[in-house]
Length: 453
Image (cartoon, rainbow, N blue to C red):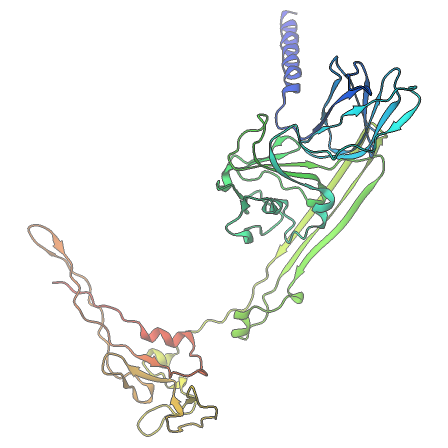
């Protein structure tokens, strides 16, 4: 019995603590409506009833004005609202529909007119709603704009790059629709990518590791996107760069939804320049992103549902790559195959290319100066003499193993000034040069000999 009473007391204390902390929750994902109600002379009206109605869901939020005629409707979900104000002896005032965005405090001041409560007056001369109650600098993107923006990888974090002071050193890192394991994040106001705070419906959406993004919702499921870059209020924390706050859509009194398929395929792509240079086909690509959303009422004006799904199928099949290696003859120093027209009696290649100012054609073995020799190997260490028939005849010296000689103070290794004699390819100075495969340019390397002193 005593144990049961103790458990009940602990449970009540826990519920009381949680209940007391609920109004103090930080990082709000809602908005607020505030204002002052006055009579025709400008005097405040106390006890006036203020009602804000969501035009899409039918939900109602009510408040009363205090002695100063001030009312406050906190924690109102984002959406489209109308405001109605009524008081005894005054006509009922109705403010036309307006959009309440994320983290906004909208001031709606109403001046009542004398008359019956049953009479309704629509306020039409109200000034535009500005954020006069807060000093934060932010960028808000609603769901309609979000759907229309061409996000190549459907990663909503790309929206941060639309805000002043937000950059990315490599935007190509936004390479898929997920940011859970990797992917780019913005550098905001000079701070590193780890200095941002991601919030989803008021909850912490950061990973412990490297402050990565925890969950990446589909763009079609986002009601509003808000990036705060400066002067955030005290309810936010855990940031030096920016606060990326996102709210998910909710159902309404009507059923709404959509389905989508975004795909990228190599059949629709142009071939890359490096593939065209090597006469290789286009790299295969199969990129599919698909899904849908649906929302509606469970109990009209009271309870709603919303569901979304996005699937991803990224496939990069293997592609063809050309790799050149030395042939058996080339390993023995015979590079005669690079000369297509053969050699003359002195072993000089007959391949020719036109000189810079010559517009004619050059036959094999044509004399200069209009036709220049190409594809001929020369020895750069012996006066650039030609290798007859492109055959390297001088034996190269092999590397000898390192040895160490000990002295009383230390061991030393020295490097003499000797190099291996290798061949180089001379290309004529011409605007219409023929390209030599990469494997032949490796002949121009020099490798020092290491010996001991």
